[in-house]
Length: 145
Image (cartoon, rainbow, N blue to C red):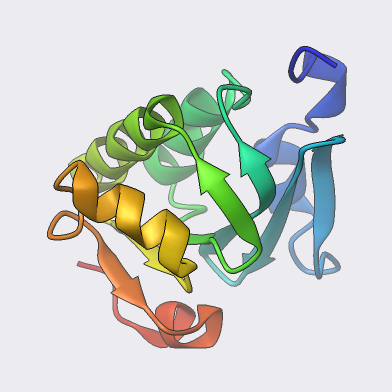
């Protein structure tokens, strides 16, 4: 598989409307990785599992921006616990998402990065940019801003 087609990724706007009944949903899957989305109140949790090289849904940033702009999301959390590796390209997306979220007065937090992933984050000098916490629950409980 060469990446994620539009059909593989249900709009985050649709997920937000379903948030009351949504516990978690896999939104993209490939033999190398899986992306899942969960809404916890106004906190969007994106779970990344496996090896994520370049295949990040292009539409994610735009959908996240719309949800931030209309108040459906006040905070975003990227759970890296089951992530084996992220490429520098994916780290570039994280920086873009950080800027996007911060531009709306919200917060983007990373949770539970394995040592190998944290090493890459440190290597490119991004550790001080992100709030990195021990659990999704801790990130969800943190106040935005």
